[in-house]
Amino acid sequence: MTVTTASVPKIGRHFRIQWEEAQQAYVLLYPEGMVKLNQSAGEILKRCTGEANVGDITADLEQTFNAQGLQQDVINFVELALQQKWVETT
Image 1 (cartoon, rainbow, N blue to C red):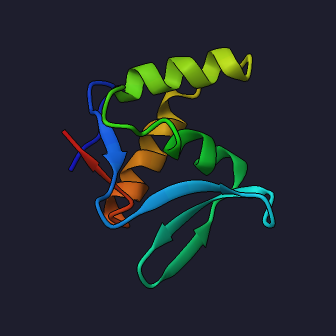
Image 2: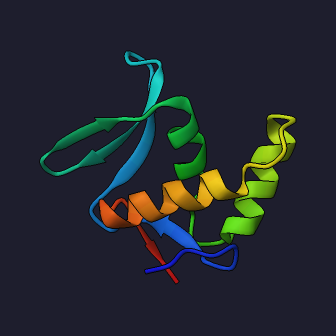
């Protein structure tokens, strides 16, 4: 599936994202284990609520981190997350 700025990602039904104090990182929990996320992945995935589209997520990240030009990075990550079934899109 091709991800566009209009795609609306949400965490996959068998996954849950949470901040793990012991790891000092966001983690993605699933029945068989856990994935420790780097900062960028955590920031993107915590915004994948099923309410915001990729364009909105990108704009929020750019504003939060005073950055520009993140759109393709966000799209690429959401495509990877889709392949891993970490997210679903509508």
